[in-house]
Image (cartoon, rainbow, N blue to C red):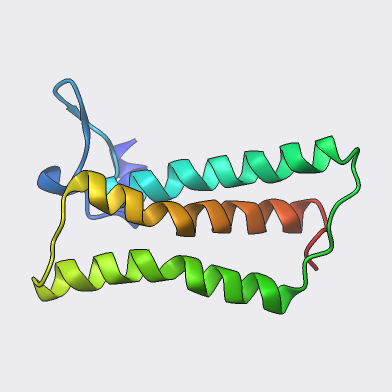
Length: 117
């Protein structure tokens, strides 16, 4: 798991969550991003199921705008950490990644269900 996580994440122990004494294979920000992406994907699919397979056509430009706006909290978190202005906590990093993760997961689901073309 750490080899796979290491491809996309720095895996610094001080920036990672632990379960007991075991470090998760990605940092707190990546944990928030990936967990919320799964949630966004599932919610989009459930929404589509509730609509009995009738999707909502999403214009690609709209999806891109929403994705860019959703990336702002994560970008500010990264910028604050890199600049040393506001590094935040692991929980804060994970929470600030949630809007981007949920949006990205929903967009992937919309593409998979052909609601976004």
